Length: 310
Length: 294
Image (cartoon, rainbow over all chains, first blue to last red; front, side, top):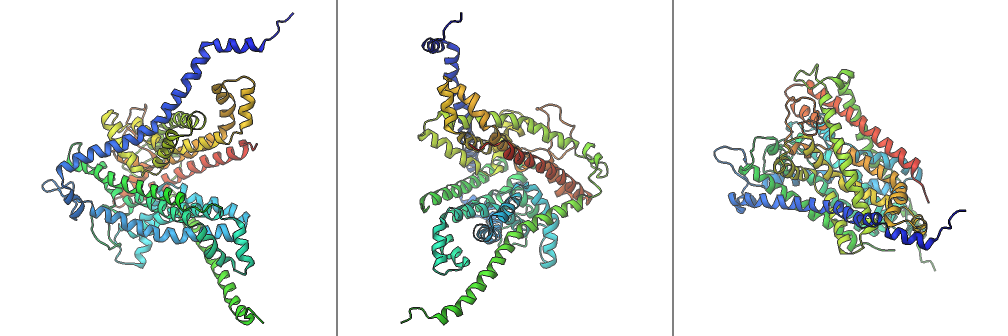
């Protein structure tokens, strides 16, 4: 004779089981701690950068950092600290990168979303995204050992390390990012709009440029901004292929150091903790962090603010 | 009465159609540009590595003599890094995802953590290197060891795992949860026995993507101040180390002095790319084979 199972009693027995109640209460707390790590990471980044940057500006004035153009951190007798040569390097290399990435990325997106059949898109899109999965050190190697020598055939005055070659390679690295984000934006434009334009006699090219792109413009611009932010933060390509000359110039055939490459140079150099050169790392890192953060936030803002909802 | 000048439209139509065709091929060319570049890159690196990439290259230790130099130490360093990055990102990433998807109330805290994670994903990797240099290398005194590198790398790839795990958990249909609650399971039992098993393919795909990012990432390791010196093959997480991308970096910049280093760098890149290719293939297989559509 088996005992009859009473649901009510079973539930009450379960409620009294202290262990499982304890587990149920502890789990969210533990999971919250895991989630909190990401907040601690942000606090850690902002905190260390701010703290050491303040120490840096105790020794170097704001005006020297932002208005002079000499940078020689490891000079033993008369070190100079100005971020302008680094900003110049970063801006020039990112500009070149975007000259490559924006036209090619956008037209790739137009081709994939407006012209390609769904089968060829299924093949092409993952292949293009392979470009984004290749480690940047590989691009750096390629820029330095292949692209620069090839460019030197065309432009003889090009230095062995220069801004042009890593800029171009960085642009190619960013193509998949611009292309896939722009394509997502274009794909969310409803087909009825395309069909309406086609019915009025527009060619697919006119549909793409007069209907789809204007309708998807917020997503497209966001993809450009994220691309620029990526170019600003990119490190290994410029470190290898653009060298470490702290040049304040517009001449892209010369070597120029970017903010990221400066951090690499000083951390792998002999700057001991506590020296001004060491603190300058954080001032440069802070500038880099603020720049990229602002651009990322700007990208989020324009997609949210100007998104057309259909 | 004619509203449209037929002749005018027909005359214009021809150029418009021609323009459409020309641009179509132009766009196709732009699409193929990236692929051609990729092909040249891989071919070029492969040609540079011919004759240098053999079994002894994988098993030999680092040496200043390019003829006998190998990547045993660097490969071991990369493996050790993964030993840390794997479990740390898995625990923290999946934990964060479960918290955000299952426990956190959709409110200010939820959106704050979510925004924070997407912002972290956009922080340049070199800045994570600076964080690691300050906190792990200096303050906690780990030095340029595997644990310092591994923890830095974990924080860097954490957002990838969190986002992937969140999507995987979100795609588990509500009726599975409700069936579990209906059977009398508690919330945690439901998550542990129903939601996570259903979400595991998505989580694993995200993990593999995160690890392959960590394997190729160089900048944060450089910032930790890992020396280009010849060091013994690491035996524990507190040892100094070098990793595959670091080796590529040092051999590339030194190729100006010793030309053969260029070939060594190319051979290391091939090893790196093969590893990444295999990992991504596994990710694709998992996604196609195990992901259920409800």
